Length: 490
Ligand SMILES: Cc1cc2nc3c(=O)[nH]c(=O)nc-3n(C[C@H](O)[C@H](O)[C@H](O)COP(=O)(O)OP(=O)(O)OC[C@H]3O[C@@H](n4cnc5c(N)ncnc54)[C@H](O)[C@@H]3O)c2cc1C
Image (cartoon, rainbow, N blue to C red; front, side):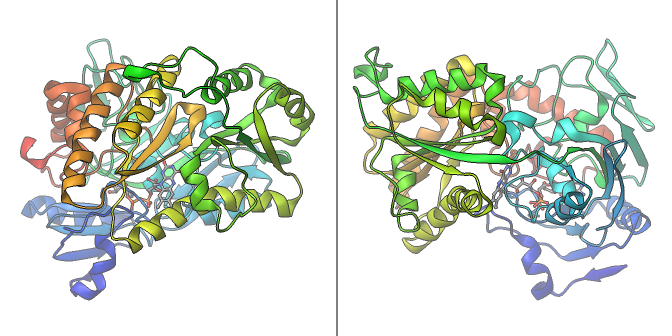
């Protein structure tokens, strides 16, 4: 097996898309097959050396970045083992690049819906973060598509878990290989969520591993279900006019008089309740986001915000009918290949432009990944607006997955003082979201950056119950240390 110890060769494995810069490791394992993975993990278990698993490195919460010990990359396990058109299933080795997989599926007129926007992620990274993609409003997250996982546990035991085969019993115990774990007693909220171990009464054992962020075992193979290639689609961007009163009245309450936002929520409700509109993606951009896109798209009109929608082309007429009566100042439609691609670029350009600008001014993004149940969303939206208006000196941008009641509220603190304030605002917002039955991690996971908020969500007892699950499945307590909860709890 290849083992690298030269720090220059290891350096790039100590980073991901977060700003976490404390990564360090003494060695990197580059196994070429499952047997070598077993060899590496057994060696680390025996010597009690922490081992952190590396996927494609696109995670945003430092999950793959070790703080000491060794790293194992699954990059050499990159074979697509099978694509079964009839059964609509594929079997992949852990290190398959999502982009390669999607390209191959295209040839067979098949599709894998939950891929994240960043396609250089590995399929195992997606499964271990329960990633959601641009179509998750309609198709849901990775969890819904994982049918089988092959996992190497830290003592070298190999377990295969198939969906529909093993469930938690009435007392909450679940058998996994030779081990038996007690499922924690909290229930993961029934909304878009990737916060800690998934737990529900009577749950399928496979769901415990999906979203476990490299803490329970090393995935070596992932089987996923597929759907037929999507029919022709159209992308539309609706620019909502700046009309009506302010959305928030004094004391941060929602203004009862007509507002652009009130009309937006009406519009969203109409879209969600009409299946014939066949919306696959529903995304929101505030006016500040649009400012970041203007250099590339100078014809963006003056407006309050924009809604980005992808839907089946066959529904276009119905969409145009729906628009009547809404305060929409302009509508862009991407229907042919070129204009469709332009609007895809429009959506993807935003994070790139934001990151480039704030890197230039030396600020680091603090991004909220919160989601709430549908009926609480207007309240959360008003809360964000109020925070903005009472902290006008801190730059903020609000955009994201409005169809799933999941917006990314991003702060850009300029100095230490602002950083401290933003940290307080983050905590207050987390409390608010939790009190609404929401989640503090809708798609990016917890990693090493959000322990405090996960504890706010499930309480100390919930976190200790997660640690107890880990101690059974990873008896040497070496895998993915400091992901989800601090290693001091083990
Ligand atoms: C520009 C950009 C856009 C993004 N868009 C989205 C989006 O739309 N939706 C979304 O959900 N996320 C998004 N992300 C985040 C990221 O792409 C996902 O979290 C992705 O699933 C991470 O996969 P990865 O292979 O890069 O994992 P890594 O970052 O390498 O690792 C992530 C975690 O998975 C664990 N892991 C990796 N491989 C294994 C394995 N074989 N066994 C066990 N554990 C393993 C690691 O230990 C780590 O804890 C985006 C990121 C960027 C940079």
